[in-house]
Length: 440
Image 1 (tube, rainbow, N blue to C red):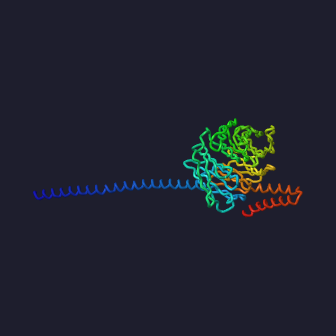
Image 2: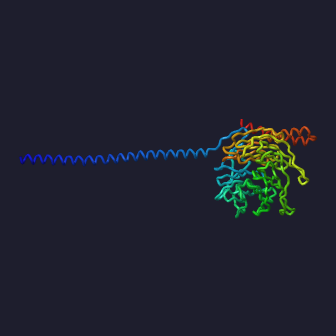
């Protein structure tokens, strides 16, 4: 019995050891599996997170690409598009000598473009940086050697001098001090008199300030128009005008003594005839014509060559219907032959003789048009609204010149006069033919 008991005990101990060993081994095998499962879960979890992150990055990149994509616009009379700004352009201004176009944008730069390159493949421009701010408005000085800007953040005027290098490009030097802060509402426009005697700034309340060139306020004008929608200095440098909530345009003369000292600002005349507020207006180069566009859905052309000191009022030449939106601008060519109107992102071009619409450009910019202007020689019409400047041939102006000169040619009495008129006709016809020949 005793050997049998020993054998049974040995078997029992062996079985027990086997079971314990099996349990330990099983435990060791299951633990890595749990860890592996956890790792797999982490990998799946991380995989989803990585995919989500990648998806977000792709969407962000697509969004950035969409933002960087330029608005596409083509038209037979489009001369070119000036591209260089990385932000939306808010203002344009041609120099009085006709050589340069200034543009400012929210990319903290002002760019000066050479107008002689408009018809070239490459468009040269020089850049002036606006430190720690950006300009919303820009305007050339009369001598085309400086320009002023309105600073968005500092809310004041800064003067930049243009220093020409030997190779023809420019460097820019900001004045040591900006003008003092005076306005209490956002600015609608700035300007410099062609005489070089004063600077104007107008805000969206009812305030227009007349400054000297050193930043001292000479006069404050209260327009009494509820608000100012637009204001500017006339090309002749004598007048300042504004429009706004009321259905008229008010014009003041800024008067100086013979020795050049400021004397006073006096009311000159009003343009009355619209039935609703006026969005915008423009002068011809000699200030003898003005064009206005209103909320009432019309635009008007006026003869302002009057003796206002003798109480003579401007003459209304005609009224035409138009599409007028909240963001509506009007431009009158320097020679007073063409009127251009922007509404939203569209532009219409009209004959100033008949008022008839002769050209229409749809969806010119990806944003509402912020600037519309003719060059000093009435050859081009330019607009801005996104990051590009569109430059159009003034074909309506060429047609107007041909029609006008042909009418004069019939009445010419001398050979010299006939030759001069015929030469002007030939130049305009050649320019018109060149526009459409290139497009073909």
